[in-house]
Amino acid sequence: MEPFNFKQFWLAMSKDERDVFAEEAGTTAHYIMTHTQRRTRMPKKKLMDQLFKACKKRKPELTKPQLVSFFY
Image (cartoon, rainbow, N blue to C red; front, side, top):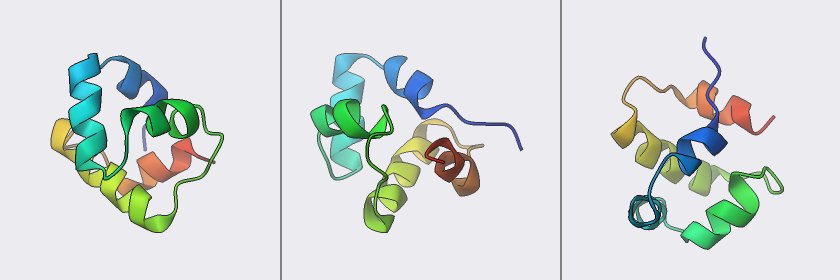
């Protein structure tokens, strides 16, 4: 399993793409930038599921264990 770097994935998006991604994930771009991509907070199950769905839409080959492993 190839590691997935959510931070690189996030930073590669434009501001508008980040806003759309965050909305699809049920949160804000600011929250993702402040807590999620910096790994200062572990997403709860609901947010993790929503982040996975939003990521999968842009990167279909991504698996949930790859995303989860970024936070550990």
